[in-house]
Image (cartoon, rainbow, N blue to C red):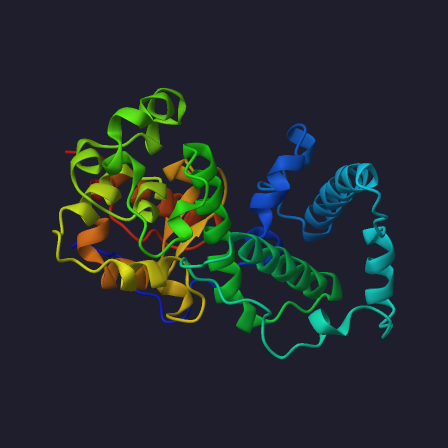
Length: 302
């Protein structure tokens, strides 16, 4: 089990802000250094940059919708309505007592899953515009971002959402010869390990960004039930914030991920030897002004 050097008395994720958790989607709208808010500590400046990116994303969607004959509504108008406290906006999102989404891997309707994700994103962003993001949304926000990240890795690997099917088998195992083209072009961290080619497993495991973590899961044996682990990774109906993984950037880059403290304690065999994730976790915590979670000796291969 990885040694933890810090055990805080409070939840280490209480200070994670809504814009940070929703940052993955905005990265597609970044055109240069002026659009990168990750190193900006001034809240007003961060919000200004993020609002600019949201406007850019809206304009891009509007062009697409016009081609389809659909008229979009300017999000700046929505923002003004929210600030004025108007009751004219969609109350199905703003006044719901619970987040309008349940994240889970298994689904018979991929389009429905996509619509649910979009609806929740709109709901969460409306809370942000109100200036009152609910703390009880945090777990869903964290896992929403992870869910999106795994979907992005799924697309990169060309798996066409097979990981959302309960009984799916990894294409890397099912037809290793047929995935050679993917292996040659996909990011190095997503390339299948030897174990992924010879051990039958669910494709959701292939989407994790750290090869060592993927191997750790497969080494647990044929009788190992990975469903509880998957629950902690993407299912917002179970667990708590510190039992989660968090993604802050490029989904296929281990340096963009963080291991929750209780996730490490609960799944020691899964994170064992994941040096790069340990180092990334420390880096993200330090950026928030928090102590490192792992000793430096565990952050480099021996």
